[in-house]
Length: 361
Ligand code: SF4
Image 1: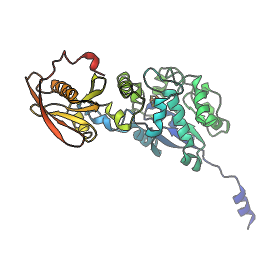
Image 2: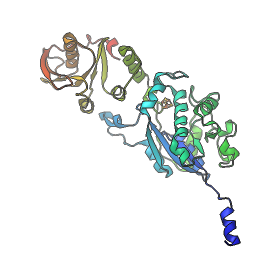
Image 3: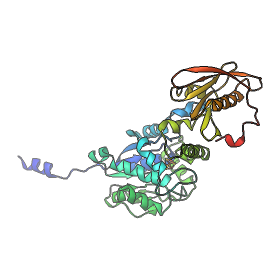
Image 4: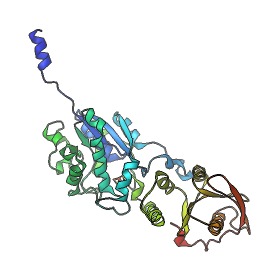
C-alpha cells in the first residue's frame, strides 16, 4: 500500500450532518427546515397522521370547499424544500395522548404539549432515524406562539420528556434558548438561527419573503380538529354517551361530517347536510342503522347508539324535518340496518321548534 493510499484511508471523512424535520404543512415548519437546510445540513421530513388532521380525505366533501385548491400541505412543503417526506400513521398510539394527556388540554380538547412531546419522541425513537444516522431533530416551534405548548418553560419539558434532549433544535427561536448539541458541535451556526418569540407572525412572513416563499398554508386554528371548539364538544359528547373515554378512527372521522343531533341520551343522529356528505355517510351503511327519505329528496342519516322502535320513529321524524318534505303531512323513509334488512315508515316531519336547540351537539 502506498503512503498516499494510507493517508487517504485514514483521513477523517467530512460528514454532512443529517436532521429530521417535523413537517406539519404550515409555515413555521417550512421555515425551520429551510433555515437548517440552508446551512448545508441534509434534511428529511416526517409528518404524522393522527386522524385529527385538518387536511385529509374529509377536506373535499363539502361543496363550499370545492373551489379551494386541494393539496396535502406537508407534501407540498417537502416539494418546496426538495426533501424526502415520510408520512407515518400514528393514529393508534396517538389515542393515549388524546385520552390521557399528562399535561392536560388546551382551550379545547387539544393536548398540544403532550402531542409535541409524543411527536418529537416518535421522530427520535423511530428506528429508521437512528439506523440512518440522523443527528438531530428540527421543529418549527416559536416561544410564545401558542399559549399552552409553546412557552419558554415548556420548551425544555418537550426536549427532556421526548428523550431528544439537546438534539432538538428550534431554528426559529434557538437564540432565545440555551445552545443545543447541533450548535455546540458546529453542525449549524447559531448566529444564523433566529430569536422569534410571541404571537406575531410578522417575522415569519418576512423570513418567508426572504426565502422567496409566496404561497404557503396558514391554518387558522392550528394543525388539527382538536383545537376546534365545536369538534371538541362533539368528542366530549361521544365519550359521555359511551360512558367511557374511547374512540375508533371512524368515530373521529364522523365527527367532522354532518349535523350531530342527540335527542336522547342513548343515541344520536348524524344527518348529512349536502350531497357530498350523503355520499360519505353512505360508506358507513354497513356499520350503522341508516334512514333515508323515499318520498322526498333528503339527507342520509346514521343512527349511533342503542335505540328501540320509538327511538327510530323519533329519528325518522327528525330526518324528515331536514328533507324536501319538511312541510308535508307525511314523509316516507326507509330504515335499513347494518346487515341490509330494511323497512319503510311514514312519519310526520318534526317542526323546526320541536328539534330542540340543546339536541344539537
Ligand atoms: S394542534 Fe393538534 S396536532 Fe398540533 S400540537 Fe396541538 S394537538 Fe398536536
